[in-house]
Each structure stands twice: as C-alpha cells, then as structure tokens.
Amino acid sequence: MRKAQVERKTTETNIKIDLNLDGSGKAKIDTGIGFLDHMLELFTFHGLFDLDISAKGDLKVDIHHTNEDVGLVLGEAFRKALGDMKGIKRFGSGSVPMEDVVAQVTVDISGRSFFKGIEKEPAATEDVKDESGYSFSYANHFFEGLVKKLGMNLSIKLSSRNPDLHTNLEPVFKALGVALDQATQIDPRRKGVPSTKGIID
Image (cartoon, rainbow, N blue to C red; front, top):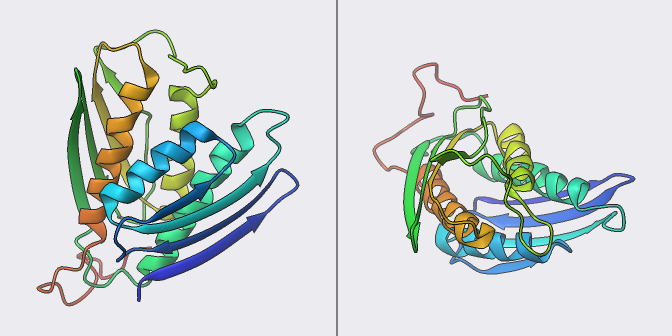
C-alpha cells in the first residue's frame, strides 16, 4: 500500500499528514487557513488521493509559517508514499479551465526540485489577494515547500485576466491533482525506476 504518515513539529507549527496515493479522493483538511483547506480539498478530490491534514500554527502572527510548512510536510508525505519509485509514470500534466481562466500544470518527479513560480499570461504586475489575505505569493510559497520535499519539477502556467484570486487558483490546484495522479500511477510495462540512471534520488 502506497501510504505515508508524516508529522513535523517546530516552535511555529505542528502538522500531521496521512496520505494514501491510491485512494478515492477523500479529504479531511484542517490547516487553520480556510482558503488553503478548500484548495487542498479540490486537489485531493481530482487527484483521487486520500488526504488527512491537521495543522496548528502561529496564525496569530500570520499565515506564512503554517502555509509553507504544510507544503513541506505534504511533499515529504508524497515522497515517502512513493517509496523506491519503481514503476511510476513520473511525468504528468493537467489543463483545467474555470470561467475565463486556464491553468496548465506539468510535473516531473525527477528527484530534482525546481519551481520558478506561477507564470501568469498576460503577466500581472500586482499580487491579487482575496478577502482572507491569501495571495499568489502565498500559493508560490506553498508550492515551493511541496516541490522541495517531494523532489519534483513543477511548471504552472496561468492564462488569465480575471482579478479574482479564487477563480485563478482553483483550476491550478485541480490541475495539480490531475497531474500528480498521472505521475504517481504505476505503469505495468515499467519494471524498474523510470530513469535511465536507474535511480531517482
């Protein structure tokens, strides 16, 4: 069973995650950040993972530490659940529209982390925020943590002129779920690690 339980406790946050890669899309998310909870529920549902997240953080200060650390622990959980990586497809992509927004997400579970931020086309000069204070910057910090611990190359391209943050980020998280579902699936033709080096580390 490709499952993982990960716990991380610091002076700033206390986070526990249970992940089942081969689930049915069941989510139980409580990070204390309502917007992030909703995005992760969408990610879980469309990725067909089972995901339970419980997080307590210094939200009286701001959401920065909790938001980033949830990304770190989620990345660690995916890495642990994937084990030796044998047989996985490794690559995945998803394209999801919402109203006038289209999000394109591409992933490579290569062992090498890379993410340069959400690419917005046409480029937006302002960091749109919603009423809760969540923003593109916070989303980028979350994805940076996820990528770092998972060892994943992540590309997110967003075609949008819509000023609403929710409408922009919802298709991003849905597309990430679709892409990671593809990348973590087992290809029965692949007998070993999907790398000519023979290892993903």
